[in-house]
Length: 114
Length: 111
Image 1 (cartoon, rainbow over the protein chains, first blue to last red):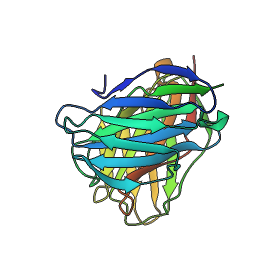
Image 2 (cartoon, chains in turn blue, yellow; image 1 turned 135 degrees about the horizontal axis):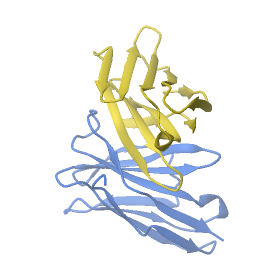
Image 3 (cartoon, chains in turn brown, red; image 1 turned 30 degrees about the vertical axis):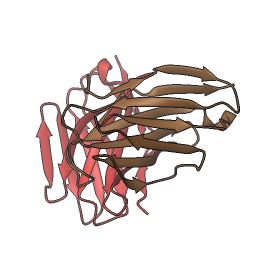
Image 4 (cartoon, each protein chain N blue to C red; image 1 turned 30 degrees about the horizontal axis):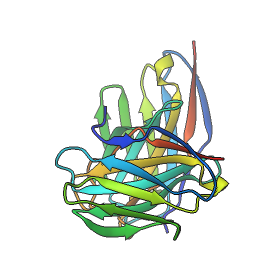
């Protein structure tokens, strides 16, 4: 158990819909990262938050957004969903703001868009 | 940006040593990681190494880093069937402050 909790574990939704994925980081970790894993793109970095502030941005679509709340949990919002958004979405947490050290991943949220 | 390359597949016999290799392009990378992913599961952090180290050992795992050649390897001693999984090399991109992953190496352990 990495200590990073993601919900829901599985989600099936229709094209055009909007979903929210939730992540609770390890106790004491201030950084949260979101990654997308798909068969054709591999593991892609989406976005990072550190102590409530956006710290780094990767290949995140404009239809996607994220935030980190004062209690440090984070949500990834995916809207106007397309079939190609079907993937495993990971959250990871780290005590630091991107300077390295331990980075632990959750079990992921499986999103299927039909 | 950073580019991380891994071979796709490795097959070994139970009890043998496995060596999974990784190359990366950004010489300023500071931390390098190995993760394990079993079917239908998340990414398990196995170990990581700081760039000022050449080697790190943790029980059956040995990580070797050759900074000159930008080459990282993970050796698993006495490989067991439970080690069958996909192993990902990841490098901390200091510019983007995020991990860049390789495509993963599928390790198959035959009894």
